[in-house]
Length: 276
Image 1: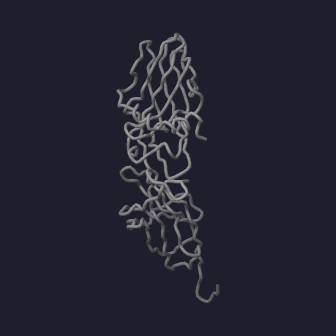
Image 2: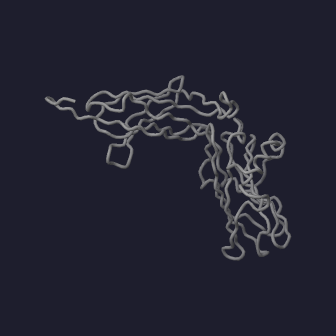
């Protein structure tokens, strides 16, 4: 659930955009030896948001502090450019949980939950930085920024329809035509009703068809096709065994990798002299 504090942030997003200058790594202001040692945003992976809903981005930091502890921690994620800006979940000045390991080193954890309204097209592909503000127990004020090498990219999550293949059953050795569609979210345009961003066709992209035979645990790539002008993908294969099919997109530019939901296809082994 998006925090009330982040809801308030959305109301003032235009003002926030003017408060996001580029900044150097680690501390801007640390006269009391409070230092950011390590930052892990979203487990070190790009943040991929699609056309609707919300996502939660975990954050973990290690902070060196020799005054005995951190009295307050106020953390936020922001992009360099664009409008993306999100406070970590929780009350102001206390939105990360910190524990000493050892006494002069603290591990702090938290998460930022956000959804529609936090992103725009200019945010896509930009690095996301963590900023922490607060006070140590000795009343020393600190402002800490994640190292650029530890920032992660904000990407658009591709949309992939589950494979469609007619009735879901086919005779062994018969032809199976499988279709789908590849899209990406336009973060500056809403669908009718306003409940999601517009899903634009993603043309000219390689999309792989993968198959997992019934009774097995891994997928095998069957082939790769290129998405058409309307984003559709289509290929015909020979039905050799029952199993599940899915489409897979490796990602390109500001659009992240994506895998479609799978579709099960039952293959009937009809031999001469039998009736089905």
